[in-house]
Every structure is written in C-alpha cells, then in structure tokens.
Length: 143
Length: 149
Image (cartoon, rainbow over all chains, first blue to last red; front, side, top):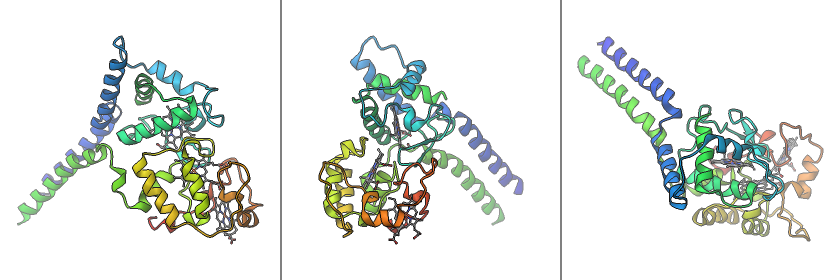
C-alpha cells in the first residue's frame, strides 16, 4: 500500500520535473498570445515570415530619443541582461524578463497588452507593432 | 478502509499533478473582479509601493489621476474600468495632510510635502534604495494599512 502511494508521489514529482523543463517552450496561455500576435502581424503585412529573436534582442537593447526622456530604453528598467533582476525608477525590483528565470512571464494576455502599451509609449513614443511584440517575446522565451 | 485511504491519497496526488500546472498556466485574470484594495495594490503597486491614499488630499489625487499618461515621466495608464475603481479608492480614503498646490503643472509628490521633508529630509538614499519614493525600502510594512498584507 505504501508502495502505491510512493509510486503516485514519484510520478507526480516526475510530472512536475518534466513540466518544469518544458516550461520555457510550452505554455498554452503563452502560445495563445504568440499565435494572436502572429495572426495580427500576418494580417497587417502579408509578407510577414515569422518572428525573429535577433530583431527582438535589438528592440530590447535599442536606445530611443523620441520617447519620454527618463526612459530611453527597455533596458532602463529591465537591465541589459534579461536573465538579471531589473529595477523601476522608484527602486522596486522587477523579476528577470527571461522565461528561463521567471517561468510565468507572458502568460496573462491582459498584463502583456497593458505593459506593451505603457512601455512602448514611454520608450518609443508610439505603440509597438504586433511584429515587434512577437519578436520581443520570442527573444525572451528563448533566453 | 486502508485500501480506500491509500487509493484516495494516490488519486489526490495524481489529481494534484494535473490540476496544479494548469492553475499556474491559467490565462488572464479579470482584474476588475478583485476587491478595490487588492486592485490598488496590483495596479498602483507595480512600479513602486502602493502609496496610502491618506498621504495626499483629494485635490492632489484628482490631478494625479488626470495625468496618468505622463506620470512622473512614465505612461501609467490602465483600462478605464480599472482606473475608475482605483481612483474612487484614492478619493474616498484621501488624507487631509497639508498640501500647497505647486504653481506649475507638476504632479504632487508625497516626498515634497513639508511633513515628509521634516521627518525624512536627512535620510540617506543609497544607490540600492535609488529614490525617496521607495518608501518600502525603509518602511517594510508600508502596504499593510491597505488591509491586505
């Protein structure tokens, strides 16, 4: 009897371990967000050929002069290395943006939409396109 | 009986491994279903601690909520239904702290109030604390009075 319980718990732990390892690639909520951005990017540009982590990395590190002066770059708050903790201008810590470090990143569509809205406006002085959002997330999902 | 218990435990354990990861993956929460104080902690506590409404009077909060698109140099806008609940919470619990309206279009600061400067004008803001507005770095229970933490 004890063995059965033990077996069940072991299976459970193994299932957790596996789901943990795969967290970076597979998450239904995150996949849905990416699929939505993909469809939007395709709709606005029929030549759209998929997201690029390189373009995402470039956007992450880019310096802008047209947004609000206190926030020239995404790295102002998220730091140059996305696997490190960031900090807001008011000193509050921000969890690392890399999905490998913060597994529940980009899984709440409301949250993702709200922060792209704010931060693209603060940094770039305009909304980000669906392609830019997808590139940015692709870069961080791979980090 | 023993068998039943073991089976139940096994079943629960298995149910646990199926249910938990799914809960963690659950898609967007509908923020407006949160009680107002929790909504305030989430929305106004994202970039700094959620400041207590009583630290500024109504007139100050009115100006702050009218300028969320350029909030001390940042875009802090939120969906209109959420702004309405959060704004109401601040207006209803606003303080009577003395506040001199700045002549410019500046947004009011708690850290610019005379009482704040008198009590904390000499505290050291280390690079790690970064800002006077980082109340939580020194007052570790600063959000308790919101009735949640």
